[in-house]
Picture 1 (tube, one colour):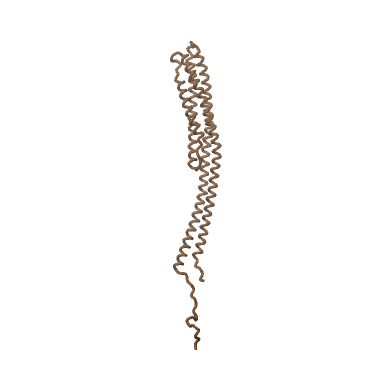
Picture 2: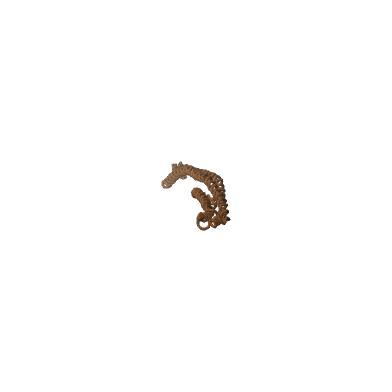
Length: 284
């Protein structure tokens, strides 16, 4: 007889292991592959960007050095031109003094001799000669200052936060205005012809005009001194600014590289994790 409590169907039955569904396997593998691709691409891109930052830093610092050196060169050129222009102004002042004494003596003489007109012409010619030399020196000065300002504009475009110092520009503009007034007075003086009319009247006009020009000469000299002082201050500031800019570029580059390396590390973690996700899980 058979045992009534034994269930034949239950004998020899073994629980089948649960096998992951094929769709789930494929999805995990696809996600793992995509993660590895993203990780590799991210690492490569971060490293390339880091190399680009290093190259960009070298270019930026080199550009700042080049612009600063060009401005320094312009400043070196401006200094002797300023000195030369100041010398020309002093020479004009001296010759104006000589002409003023001569004209005052002729004007005070009721019957000056016949040769005084020629002496007065010679004195005016000497003033004209020094005046032309001054104009030439000032043209060189202005050209170099304008070129220096153009270099500063380039630095202004390249470096955020850098502003062009207005000191030399304002001083040059003020000097331009003073020189125009000076030109007008000198031209008035040079148009006086001692040979027309009584020479003592012409001499009196020369003496009066020379007195007005002497005032303008002092103003021109002060303007040249102001330009020189502003440019010297600019030179000192430029040296400090160039150093600050290069330091900021270096710190920014280092910070960017560290950030890129951190992002590359995250992509490496993604790559490793995705590789583990692609491996089939052991059966339970």
